[in-house]
Image (cartoon, rainbow, N blue to C red):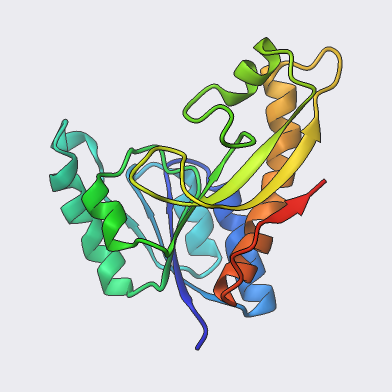
Length: 197
């Protein structure tokens, strides 16, 4: 059975585009939904142009009631019946209840070499620490933020004179390589970490 994949985004969705393009080109999974917490997210238009159904549930009217927001977000997700849920720049912290519903089948990409630098501002934190390398990680999502079993990492050398922006741009290139490769392996049942230089 070819897995069905839903993708959650909050912005431009460049990683989402790479995932969809890989699935459509290689046939290892079927993209069935791209959903966002922001109706203005440009990634929704990009997904629609790739022929993927979209949905938008604005989180703002729900204030701090994450459970109410997630209840609405779940409606299009459950209607799409995904086997795998991919977070691709989805900038909302999900409740343990939501995560538990998709335990073992929700993936996220994070722009650091986890367990280093969970959370935000990862590139600046790597520079401030004097690290010689940075990178990105694909991991299974658990209720702990940016935690969970690591499924893949790609490393990028930090160069003299790097800023957070220049480093982020080089890491993003590797994100676009890593996430589709890990998803393809995950879809086939492979859970051992994929390590890219």
